[in-house]
Image 1 (cartoon, rainbow, N blue to C red):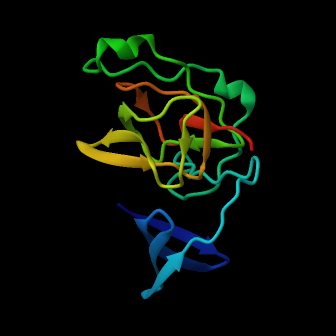
Image 2 (image 1 turned 135 degrees about the vertical axis):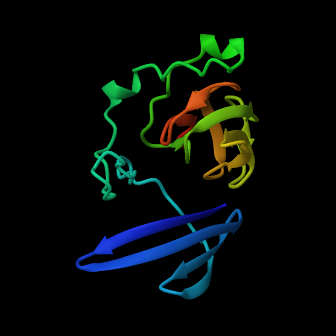
Image 3 (image 1 turned 90 degrees about the vertical axis):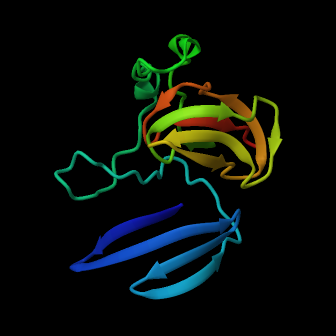
Length: 168
């Protein structure tokens, strides 16, 4: 899947298209120029999370980092067509350092990991159905799964915590 980001820096607007080709390889188009990009390292920067704030009147701006108190709030009720198992669902997870979140709203149709599993970056950890398309959710990093916050059949929003990695 390709993602398009529109960014305003000063009075200039940049459109950046990013397509993941492999776990650490991306095709990036900026201003009509194409680049093959290899990710050599990544790290979580604590609470430095950039999430589009859709409610800002059409412009995209970085939302304030989620507070831990807000994470305890249960997620929205499942759609009427969701399986009965989803009705006894877990609340949305904690977020913060070591957490992997949903990249878009949809319904989790598979969870492929459990606490204690060791994963490699890019390994399938879940499948998200969004608009009748199955999207593979790959591990955002190599590590050990500490917690899984979602179940198959659960509806999620963009940014909902899916799982947490152990700090190693």
